[in-house]
Length: 248
Image (tube, rainbow, N blue to C red):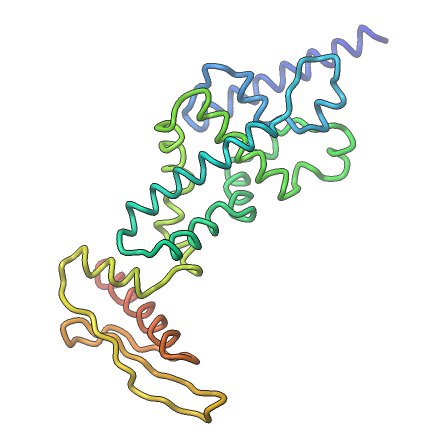
């Protein structure tokens, strides 16, 4: 009986080793220390069930990965949005490194398949648990940093995270006026002006209509409960218009 258990475990370890080899091939990165990679995917419940084996869970790597992710994303945003204020940068970074975003990245890379879980955690659906997947993503970043260097982490994020920022996946927390300013400055295209066209409705329920123009050419019109909101919507419309123009 003991022998068949040992055989079973041997097969399971071999399968796990193959899965990690495939994973590295898929992301185009080879770990120097595969033990670190496995640790990134090792949940504490797995360690508790294999006490006689020298397994370590991913909690310390997660702590490190969290800091590395904050740094690399901060640097990227700092360079990409030179006119964005500290408050806006903080808000945008928070949207990128929050749990739902990390879970999305982990899903796209099929991290769930590689996680090493204890039987109880497995049976209660741990493999799909958002908090667990977000932790694994951070732990992986920590392991990659330790095994290689910051440049390798940045190369990895250039494939997985940064394109999403460029596609506007986090623009719901962004300041459209800042973005528009950014685009205009980059093209050296001239002067942006905002003008309130209309204020309507009773005092407790005002509605503002704003217009944004570039060198007196109207780019967008927006409405909102405040001047600021109306200007944001006008800037959003202007950005969409500029995007369409660039495509043609």
